[in-house]
Every structure is written in C-alpha cells, then in structure tokens.
Image 1 (tube, rainbow, N blue to C red):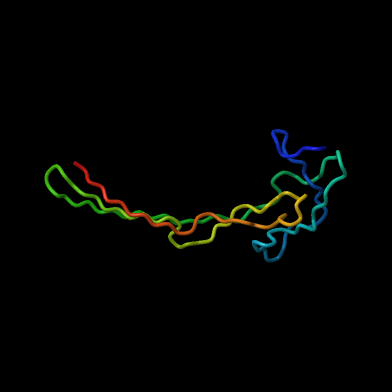
Image 2: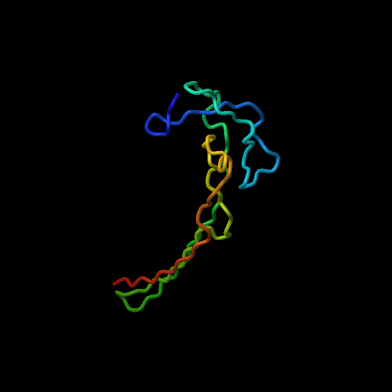
Length: 123
C-alpha cells in the first residue's frame, strides 16, 4: 500500500509458516523464512504483535550509611548497582521484512552492570 513508516505506519508482510525457531539466538530470533513481502499496494496478513521479544530481568541494589559529624551535620555514603548480576538484556529484533540483512536479528542490548557512588553532606 506504499506506507513507509511515517504517521501512517508500516505495511505488514504475509505470514506463511511457523514463526518459532527451536533455539532463538541474537542472529536469528524468529523464523524469517515464514514471512513474505505482499504484492505491491496490498495488505499483508501478519497480525499485530505476533512476535515476542526477549525477556527482561534486572536486579538493582542500593546501600547507604549515614555518619553523624555533629548535631546538625551528617554525611551519607551511598553505593548503587544497576543490573547487579550483569545479565544480558537484548533489545527487540529488527522487524523490517524488506531488509533481509537485518530482519530477525537483534543488533543491540540494554546497558550492562553499572555502579555509582555518592557522598552527601547534609547540614
């Protein structure tokens, strides 16, 4: 139908087979052979949200300790860790069926473990 991804959205391909692969990897998250490009100016039959992306899990931790310096002044030491166990959380796979080089591949991931320290003086 000529939609190219602006406000009108993208055209959907035809789904013509089993979408699942037995062992999904970042190089092949789903069966890309199960999709076909529809004829020009026609709608594809692939439904909305038929592909599930990878799961997401992250453990974030914060530890802090307050030290009293005087009656009106204290210091707070804090350490924060995000994605503590450093689990790889992949982003969604590429879903543009017109680009056979990247279609079905996961090209990026969310941030790895991050740790930050803070020292606060309260008065």
